[in-house]
Image (tube, rainbow, N blue to C red; front, side):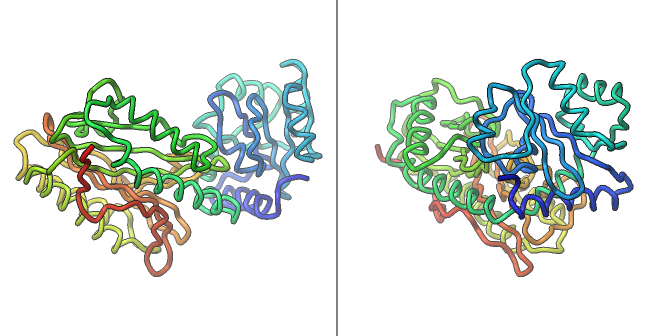
Length: 374
């Protein structure tokens, strides 16, 4: 067994897009050093660990693996015939050079490939060019197997978001709820977590990248969760906001405004539109709403959404630059508004862009601010 036909076809697309971008290449070199380059799994079609392994992709779409002796049994058990085990760093370098034989220009992921690896390729006589933007473009197009994994990750994540009001209890800490949610994700079939689970109570919900801690849930708190299950190395990403007890008027108004902006943004999504235009409209509305509801506000201080897949932030964004959305793009749509010292609301779903609009992949309830009574 080697890379499946869908993966090989997408690998061939890397070479076509690189040539179109003016950077023709003879081979692609991906090194899966810790903490890992998930392009490795994209070009090989494998979900096995293979840390400290490398992949060399040729124009035909086939990938050769250079794997540590430690992971030779995994390569054999998968039936992977194109692999070369190594027992030392020197042997690894020799086998990589052999696998790249007759290639002159090597495409690399300049965002993640260690400097040492780049220098070794150059010392071996290869010309090295960064094709990280091409890799981002190629990952937009998911294989059927990737979409099946992503849909399952979204199902698990949505189910756990639905259970949060039952799990959350007054007096528990943010970390307590993280543990409960991750236990439930595993129970639903998650193979891992797309990123570190975020739970924020009260004033902490106004920090988009809050580090969950020992803050305890109190009556009247907003409760924000941002998390995602991983299946087949494809990760979901959802955010929901709840309230402990009966909501105050400002909490209800803030939630309604964010939900309204998300609905408007989802309605605007379709292939061929400029993602930045949708982001700009959402940000303008929420910045203004934040000013009306709180004297100290950050409004919406982040992007409206980002592409999703092998990486949680998979290379494309609905903000900052002009980006004409392609059909098949999987992206988050996550407007938020934050009142410092009081709390914030973010509502995030995963969608796939189509010619006629978008299909929502996450379905946890969000129609109103859900009250937690425990």
